[in-house]
Every structure is written in C-alpha cells, then in structure tokens.
Image 1 (spheres, rainbow, N blue to C red):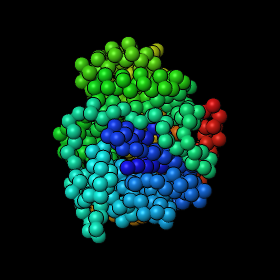
Image 2 (cartoon, one colour):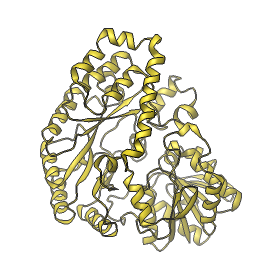
Image 3 (cartoon, helix red, strand yellow):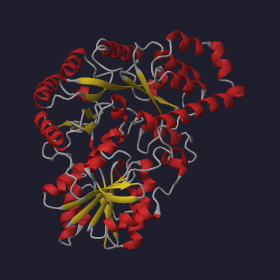
Image 4 (cartoon, rainbow, N blue to C red):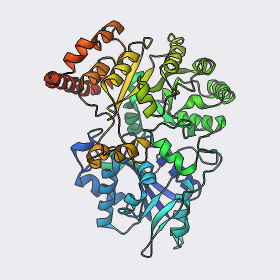
Length: 497
C-alpha cells in the first residue's frame, strides 16, 4: 500500500501532513510526500489555475504507483486541490481523499470533487482507510470519514480525539521519498532545498537565522469568532480539544532535527497559545530545553495567558521573540470577536509585562485584524489610539479579516447579507489583502513601531482624520498604500538574503 500525501501550502513545514506520513510509516504503510509551494503566494485572486501543465504532468507521474492520494487544504487553497485532483482524474482511477481545515468545515462541498473527505484529526482515520483499501474492504463505517462506496454516499460522525498526543511519532522530516516543486518541475527534495525554504520563513527572515517550526500541542483555549479553531472545537466539544505533547516527546523531536539539519539556528514554536500550558509544564519545558537543545526559540502568546513568571522562565531558557494577538483596540470589535475579556486594560498589562524584558527580547510582534465589515471610523481610531500607547519597541502584523467558512463571523455575515460573492470575498481573498484606506495606511506606517506616538495621535485627531479620510483623497491614499506595498515586495527578496 502506497499513500501519496500532497501539500499546496507555501510553507514546507506542513506539520499536519508530515505527522500523517510519520503515523502511516509507523504502521508499515509506504508514503510519498509531495510539497507544491504555490508560486503565486498571497495573490490568490490572480490566477485560479495555480500550476502549469509541466508541474501537473510531474505531479501525476509522482502518483502513478499510488493506491491512495491525500491532499490537505485550507479554504484559500481550494483551487490548488481542485486542479490537482482534476489532473489525477484525467490520468488514473486512484482514489483521492481531501483533508485539513476546509475539508473538515465544508465536507459536502469537498465530496463533490474527492472520493473521500477526512473530518477532523486525520491520523487514525487515514490509517484505517489505507488498511481497508489495501484488503479491498468497505470504508463506509470509518469514523471521521465521508465518501462514496459502491455508488452510495456515506457521512460518518467525527472520530473521538485521543486523550494525549504522545502516541504519535514526530513529524516526518526523513526526506525519504519526499518531493518538492522547484521552478516548473517536481523533483526529489534535498537537504539544500529544505535549507533554502526554511531560510525564507517569516521569522527566519526577521531573526537572520534558519528556523525549524514545530507544535507542542493542538487546539486553543480561546473561542475567537473569526478563528477556525472555534469552528473545529464545536465538532468535538471543548473537552479534551486542547492537548499537549509531553516535554520529553518534544525534546526527542528537536534533538533529532538538530542532528539531521545542523544549520538550524532557532526553534519556532507555533502553538496557538503556548503560554496556555500550566506553569509546572512551562518550568519542565525550560529545564529540559536548556539542557538538551540550547538554541534560541520563539513562540506565540495571548493576552489572557501572559504571565510574568512564565515569561521570565522562558526568556531564561532561550526565548528571544514572541508574537501576540491584539486584533483590535475597539471594545465594540473586541466583543464582536468574542475577545471582550482581552480588553485594552488587559492588552496593555500584557504588553507592559513583555516590555520589562525588552533588553533580552527582540521587539515583539502584535497582530491586528482589519477590514471587518462591521467596523466604524470610531473602531478604527480606537485601534490606532491603542497602538499609540504600546510601549516601544514593537512591531505590528496587520491582517485583513477573512470570513472563513464555519466561523461565527462567517455565519453572521451570511445572515446579514454581507457576503454577496463568497468565491471572491472568501475563497479568493488572502489575509494580506488589506483595504487601501487611510486607517490602514497609518497602521502600515506604524508597523515598525518607530512612528512617534504624538504624530500618530495627531494623524487620528478630528481634522486630519476628516480630511485624509475623505472621498476626495481616496485616490491619493490608495496610490500611497499600493506604492508602499510594491516597495515592500521589491525589498523582500533583498531582505531575505
């Protein structure tokens, strides 16, 4: 039995796909991993056909001896999955299973194109599917799977989550039978290719070192209305959804990776809320990390889980940079995002805790979500006013709101008639596509944290806000915004080397 696993994501880390490969190999099933980083990046709307005929030909050739092909997808990569599946359909009868976040949230839609759709965590479901297909059995009873068998459609409930994550081996970075899109060809993945792609990672560029990205847990303790985590959590219920790997399990993975890739210069922990770990676990992690790994590392934090004692322990263990979700400075939008507990007082408290370690940390990054259709001018000014109060140094990471299917905000927008063209406004929208408005221009100018607070407050005072936010100056603001975006695109290749 050979299972081919395919990732269309720009980042070759693809933690979920590599975890699936490791699990299947652990059970004696051959896997082949194909990484097809989308060359168009965040220009989602620019080109529905994401891959050239030459790439599709190589892809089909890589799948010619497959017994099952699995493709992972998020909503913005629906076109990628569809194009790859169509190419396979034209060349062979190999069954195709779609998985990942979009498949979990929109299984009915995905079932129109794939033979099977995996709902939720996929390790046990995919293993059982492969084993049943190998012996020619009936897959229609597999938990967590939708599909077609002998002309009949079946839709099974989600599979219960295992209580822990240590049953799974670390993600598959073996390089054995791994392939990658390079230029216009799909070729075997080499250590040099791994190094090149990891060098271009966002945090790697920021730190000037090559980072290895991992996750020490699954799930999130929060219920943000814009986040797909909340939608997935509804499938399982809150109980047992947030799970952690043991410290020893994580350290074994990191030691192995450092031996395999000695060029790794830091570890990038991408859990949604690493600070959500209990203090005892944080202390154990820090102790083991200092003894066994010793590289700089980065992680994510949330305002509700930020604590000075946790941060002090992590900084002592090698934490050099962190990112925290702020999202908005407006009480109205905080309530809309289901983040009222993360009000401005709580946000500033967390920021001042981080600021205490400014001599030992790089400037932190604070995330903001822009362009919500319910935002008013006062909401936008409230976010900018909060930015003017953030202790320096800092960085901003602004994202445009994408109303992902399954989220509470998607349901609200649909009910209120705000999603007139879901294909354009969701599937073909990337979170980097910020509206070229005056408020977004000010946030862009504030991204490095170097704009003087007094100047930002002046820019959002009534007269400048009324003048520069007027319809008459929209073309000027739009032109300035787009010029800055083009300049950033031109400088990005230079900054990454």
